[in-house]
Image (cartoon, rainbow over all chains, first blue to last red; front, side, top):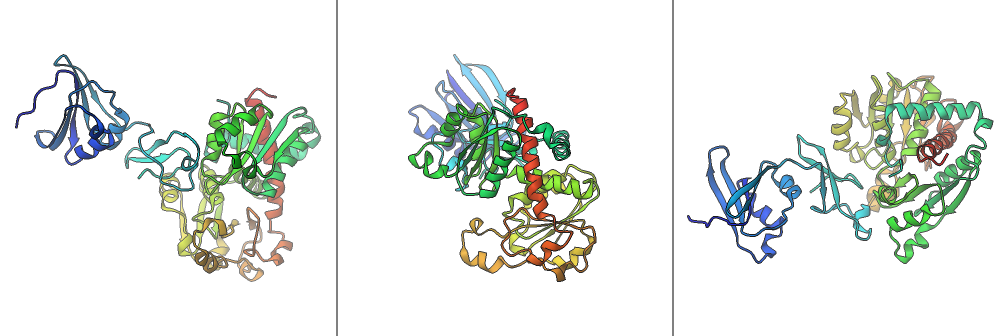
Length: 138
Length: 308
């Protein structure tokens, strides 16, 4: 399978196999008019299988969202065909504007333009809680 | 951002001790505190009714020599016109020195604190937190028992939705060898996250039971709670469970002579009126203790904000 290499853009690598589509949707890549390749179940020495997303455009990428969905993923920034930056992601302490609190009693369900913020409360079990009502992230 | 009190966990153990000491000093020397807040204003913003909590805050401020701006029915004024909590907090910051706020939505006090330029005290945000109730509970236990370490604390009634119970567990979990006996019907047991993230994390001893009388003899503190109608989506569930645990003189037969019975009030029928005469009943003292702790808290936050 041939996928053109990228001149200027972002490669999200080491995505746990099966999570590529979820990331694609959450990052809103389906709404963009740019070339995006999702490569699923690539054989990986380290992971067995992995997914990769290649975005052929210089876009601001929400690293927090990627870290939340798949903290093991890496992000490579490509400029003029060269790798200029490689980022290992971790679970962010705060998630801003990524997920929405589902608690109908939470102030974020009614307060105008209130930013949705979740805090990492249990790194081991990957638990995020709404900073307002402490409801667990879905 | 100025210091506010949203959740009991915002206070360190040292700060809890400092508030307890101030409150006890206020009790011993009220005249020394009677003018400390002269010229300062507390705004009580209540978006849902709670006469007793509001009056407690107002009495606290008056006894410190301060004044009170009271919005008793905030829900029908600015909020009814669609004003956000954030905007309300900014506006009230222009008039008062400190805010005590109750709101039906969970997290509303935090939103107010993030937007106000003066300290905000959470006087209850839905089913989430009510830290000044916990302060009242702690002062009551301290005054009745003299210490927290080594106590066996029975929590009875609605342990699932009862925010006062979760806050009290959080506060007492910091002390040595406190043991909890969690007494509730199956449907209203302490949520698993409280057990996991507080009790088990701190390695605290606890047991769960549905039998109040069997647990009674070992208790040093019995904290009764009301099964609250407003926390249920379903009226049938409420009616079925509300009378599950009613404390009567009979049930106290096996209790220790120095047991302290607490209740955050208002009581519906979960403690028989006959218990009120028992020297072990501490729930009205608890109300008074709440006022002293609110005085201590107002002083602390105003000092930290540089207002005093």
